[in-house]
Every structure is written in structure tokens, then in C-alpha cells.
Figure 1 (cartoon, rainbow, N blue to C red):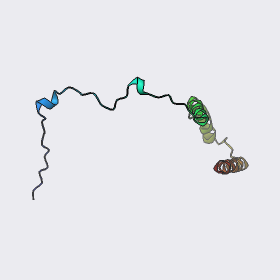
Figure 2 (spheres, one colour):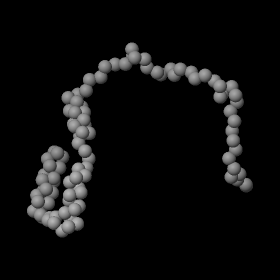
Figure 3 (cartoon, rainbow, N blue to C red):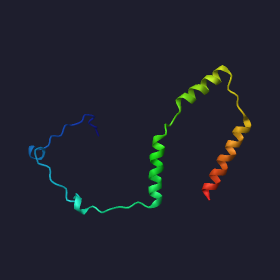
Length: 98
């Protein structure tokens, strides 16, 4: 059996190409819409989302200053601060999981 690798162009009849668009049957009009109220939790989440959107994702000035300090050998790492931060993060995760 031979397979034809070429694509064949399909042309539609002219009656299909020039047919006017028909209105959709499921389209809702403004009169059919209902009012929706958000729960207090949803409203709080929306407010938090707005606040988070205002915070820049990366503080470029801080990143650049840390890069310079590392490159010059002036950046000191304090293991006790890292450990305390990790422990706080785990405590927070455990508290949220309850």
C-alpha cells in the first residue's frame, strides 16, 4: 500500500463561504443575568490578591547589592539566622496544615 505524502487542498463550495453568520441560541442577554455576591472569604481573597499585585516580585536593588557583597567577599552568612528562618517556616506550615 502506497501512502501519498502530499496534502490535498480542499475547497469549500461558494455557498458555504458566503453564508451569513447565524445568531447563537444560547447567548444570554443582559436581562437574564443574575446578581452574584461573594462570600466574606472570597472578598478577603480578592483584597489580598489586589495587595499582592501591587508588590514588585523582585527587589532588584537588594539583589544587586547582595551580588556585589558576595563578589567582593563582604557577605557573611549566619547559620543561626538561616536555621531560625527554616524552623519558623516549618512551624508556619504545620500551623496552616491543621
